[in-house]
Image 1 (cartoon, helix red, strand yellow):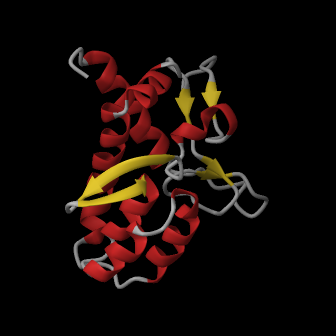
Image 2: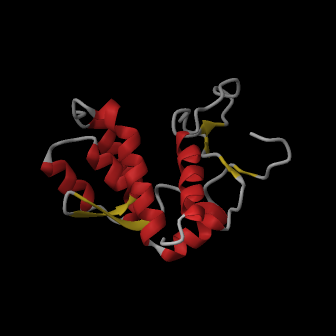
Image 3: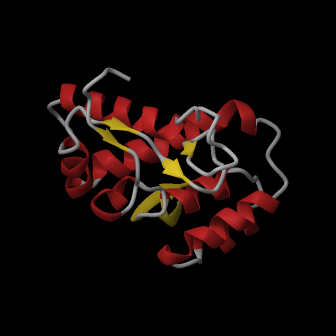
Length: 157
């Protein structure tokens, strides 16, 4: 991160739209999901029943979708696919929805960090006492900044 760069390190309040829990329709496998989180968690499994169960949850039940996703039998290729799956859903979220695209662009050149307190140092950077000496990988923030950059370069979107 460059010195002097503004940092957005909380995907809540004015920046809640950056969260995967933010309500937005995402389509995958012919099924509509109510948030990126819903679609991502369903994608961990090849079981159509799991997909349907998650797709039937309301948008404000993204936490339930996450809980279900933690308990499913992971598809064999999940570790190889998870980054591409997340990227695809985020691209859909921020390119198909004009309002969300505009909001992402309005973050300017801010460094985006999915700051959290639930020990997620892969997608974000946990700020709790237990994790204070761990630098999170912030995969979600990095992915959002790359998408923002692509949108800025592409006039068609």
